[in-house]
Length: 516
Image (cartoon, rainbow, N blue to C red):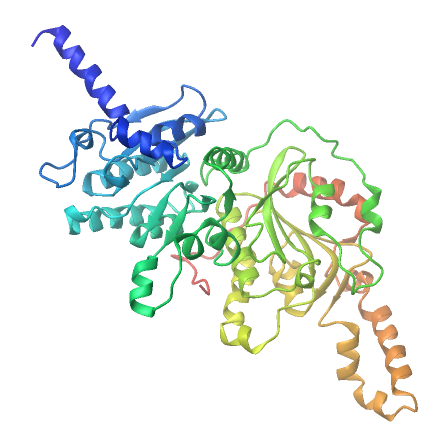
């Protein structure tokens, strides 16, 4: 074979590889409103930055159902590139090749880039669009999934792992995204479930379609499996780029900082009146956060799951932080099982990747009720406590209004290791609210009085003045400083600059045993 023929063979193989499953299958993908694997990578990564690896890995011979195009690439495109100038490793399953199904060789390609990501301290991003295990390969496909799951686990907390669900992800395949840090889904295109609608109907008699079983809406609002959703693939890929801008490339780096675009000493006097005098009236904590952090920097995660809890990323003076808060306008900011899981997982992610935590506290406590107790609110609530107590990153808390009982303790209180603790003048820190406390500790005095209602009101006022003011907490050393709400931004930026280099060593151990 001449040198010219050899070169032409390489050109032909590259062309075949880039066609995936062939032009007809690509057309079908487009008819569904979906991009191909390579088109997705072109949108996700910086222009011309993608370098493919193992593009000629072939399908094992003799597998039924394969056509001439399935012999090259094996249903997944793998490699590395850049996002906003930062190195990332990627894999994108190709639905045009045997439905993106995973076999042994596809698994080896995915595992290779996962290993490279960990060895080189860079995020790993998976673009998932697959019919599941390649049944024709039998147990070899299951072995392939197991190898991926093991790496998801070993590299957890080492490099960020992000999964974009851009098509089906069913059965055991769903466990890999579940082990990653963030899951992004696309409305009407993404589906995740362990057992499909047909099997469910056969076994339980329940009828459900793909969207209502495992669509983006379900996993964003009900199950809490998904972190973000988008209306289109382009939007989802853009969300991934934005998300990466807040997190470091690995667990040895500090969180990214950008050139500040906002005055660190900016004062918003509207904050001084944002909390109603009447403690029973709600206000919007999202508005508080937006007024305190760098302008337009708040990036919320899981915004429609457990909406009474808020988690997300923001910047102070250009540097990334994790934000945790309660939303008083949703269930009064109470903490329940879902809120506990949402908060604790986010806190642990931030701690693993050296991202400081800023917590805004306003909660009346944990949700009472038989259902919550029977489903384990004790165990789930303890997850928040464990996450904050274990975290060694810089931690700042601001009590804006209520911090009652367990809600005070678990939400980044001083005595579980928070570095700087502020309170607004509207803060109330106690075991419980004044009315409940008075009804318990002064019951006899109230009942013996000539006018029980008047006596109760008098005692409630006395309790509020004596115990519920932030100055009582400050006097006891629970709060470091009572600040004006409008001072919050400058105070947080100053505190972060002082504690950013803190060092804490936990006792030697293999690992703790979180109340999972």
